[in-house]
Structures are given as C-alpha cells and as structure tokens.
Length: 314
Image (cartoon, rainbow, N blue to C red; front, side, top):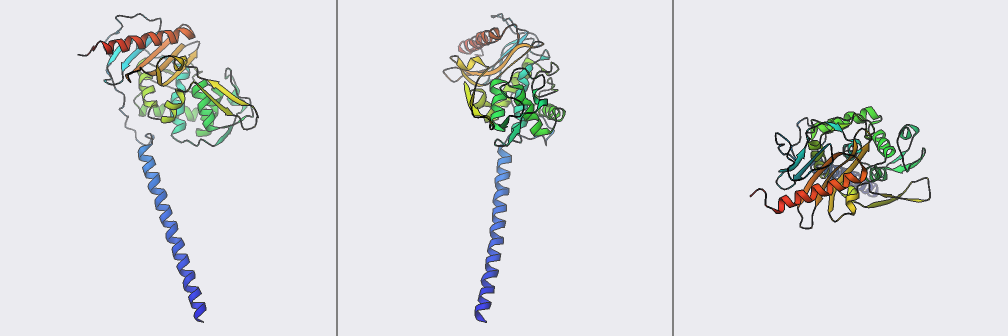
C-alpha cells in the first residue's frame, strides 16, 4: 500500500514539474518574442510616420560646379544630412527596380528564409529575363538575394505571392510601408518595377535606401559582388552577379539598387563610403545608358566627397 502511495506521489510531482517546465518555456518564448519585436524593424501597426533620414531640399536646384546627364539626382552627406547636390530632386518619375527595396522590406517584416516557393506561370508572365523556370522550387532566402542582386522579376513576384497571396495585396503593403517611413511622393502598384506607375523622386529614393540599411539583410545582400545558390529541384549551382557595378569600384557600397525600364531610363540609388569612412547618399535617375548611370554616379560621389574635403560647412 505504501509503495502505491509513493508511486502516486511521485507521479503527481512529475506532472507538476512538467507543468512548471512548460510555463517557464512559454515565458521564455514570450520574452524572446518581445525582445525581437523591440529590436526588429517597425511594423505597420503604428500609423505614425518614422523620421529617420530627414533633410531639407533647397528651394531650387543646387547643381553648380558639375553637370550631369540625368533627369534628376541628389547627393547627401550622411553624417549631417546636408544636401550637397540636387537637380529636379522632387520630380516624381518611374523608378523601375528600385521598387524592389520596398519589396524586400515588406518580405523581411515577415521573413521565413527557409520556406520554399514554387515559380508559377503568373510569376513568369512578361517578366523580362530570369534565371528561374516555371516549376522551380526556391528558398525564400535565395529569392530575396536574386531579387536584390540580379533584380530578377520572377523572384520578386514569387516573394510577393508568398507574403500577401496576390500582387495587389502586396502592393498595398508596399504603399503602407512607404507612408510609414515618410515616403509621401512614392507610389507602388506591384513588386518588380516593371509597371511604369511605380514612381518616386530622387529625394524619396535617398530616404528609401537609408531606411533599407536598418534591415541588415538588405545592406549585406546589396553590397555583395556575387551570390551562389541551388534551385531545389535542379542539380546545377546558380551564380548571380550584382547589377550595381559600383560594387566593383574603389568605393565601399553600404547599400544600393539599380533600376531600368524604357519609361525610367537607367537609375541607381546607393550609399557610398570612401576610404576614410565618410558616407554619401547618391541617387541618379533617368540616365540615357546603363554605363552612363554608373559614370555619373561616380562623378557625383567624387564631387560630394570633394565638398566634404573642402569643409564646405565651416
């Protein structure tokens, strides 16, 4: 009888211990979740715009000392947020694949890197050149890299579907995100930038690339020269090269994104750091050729760094 009572007692103790362990585990999980939420990029729950990279545009163009072959441009000292150069910086124009920065932000706000997405015929329709075929099974992490580094449109559409279920619903999230970070001259209709209605200004593109650096995955990925991965249902390893040729220049690229459709011409928004650690944001929109975009960006960066060397503000 005593043995039976002792067994029953130990059984109860075991049940109570297991319950306490489960409660402790739940509290630990909740505390982790709270810490992650506080340190992660802001969600859309708050309607109050974020003020992170603010600067004052001059009343007119500030482009003395250098002439660029562009529709619009801006250069900003990242330390003081002083505008060093601007030309038509508040003109709203198509920005093509620069749109993918907003796409990446929305994806990273609910990021499941190891999830697998299958490329569909809808993803492939009128998508320009792509390394993916219909039926390819790709990890979300690799889709994100391909969208940002190679500017792959099928990758961007597949990501949008995986997050929101439809292109329209994802575009609504992009616009909500844009308002949340204070991009009031930016409007998005889909995740790739192929739609010429995806539009912004040089000033907003400067804010956009700086806010993107708060997402370490975007900054790290867009600064890569290349990236290799494997499509899960294929054997051959795929290697992609960054469309931003400035990553091969003498400058360190903190973050950046290219863009092109015929309506936008060639575009680039980027943060550039020189050998002394000084950073400038450079945006060039509407260059007439792919190499002209990078040539004018380099010229504008050199001009901006020279202004800093000359202690322009003192």
